[in-house]
Image (cartoon, rainbow, N blue to C red; front, side):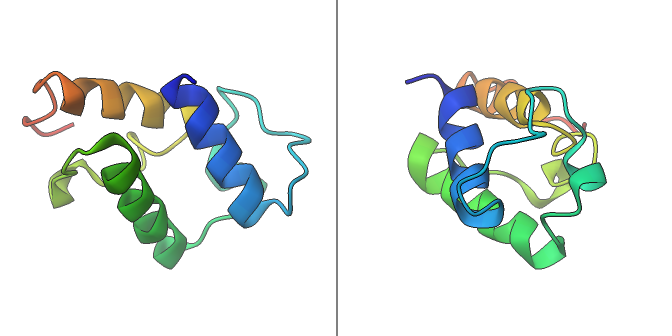
Length: 87
């Protein structure tokens, strides 16, 4: 399963009651009003566990968490060691 699919499935299960309606890879997550700031840290914890990465605090930004694609890109960068610079 791709990172994008895993991330989508997690968001849909945890914050959308299993209904993926309206969530596309480029949908701005903040416009859906489904995840609050505490939820972002729950998502960070999930990503760190699922993908065995560490997400530096400076990488937890609107730019990196704006959409499923942005989150997936962040995961990819961190898996290859490219995510150590500020976003």
